[in-house]
Image 1 (cartoon, one colour):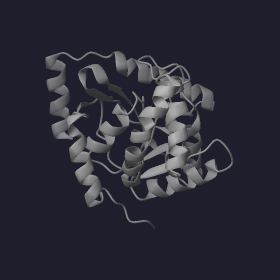
Image 2 (cartoon, one colour; image 1 turned 60 degrees about the horizontal axis):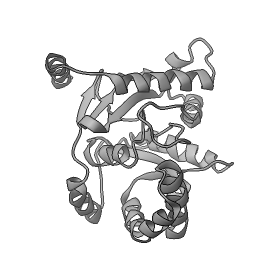
Image 3 (cartoon, rainbow, N blue to C red; image 1 turned 90 degrees about the vertical axis):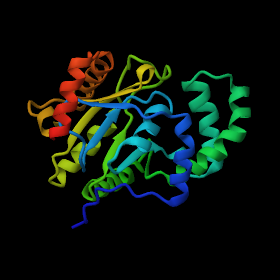
Length: 247
């Protein structure tokens, strides 16, 4: 039985790097609509470029493992190719020449940063089974798995257009291991630095009526977009903060 670890552990040099980045990535206001994230859960979030991942890595006080494209975790050469063509050109719509020039500096720095992350590489082939095995082991250790499932074919949009189904494969794998994993849907709203985190829903609840993976993904996609549109007045925020303090 793996020992449950509920404390963030980072290498000393990575802590220094994160402190240096606080000028660019300000701490968001975390708004929980239910119980706070604890351990052994899946967190689904929009991507919002680098802002959502780094906000969770820098400011969430619980241990997390993030799913990330394997190209970003398998060496500088692969990272450079992925960042230039996929991330900056296809998703952020940069000019390809500009992306290549920028990444001559950005990719080495990003590579250093990724060495400090607790990252689980994802694949689009049979190696995805390795992703699932590593993720289940992390859940058993008490870590939370952060997944950015949005379909970003047209870039990172405020209104998400689709969810990929990978997280349902993880939930199914956990189910076979006797783990009914809680899922927190969340939305990072960059314009007002607000991270809205919904109350957890267990995978067994999402599939209680025989829902397919497509139906589960569509339901959580709609909920994610709903979170992004939520507005909170001062009184509502005070009530939420009071409930969090009592939790």
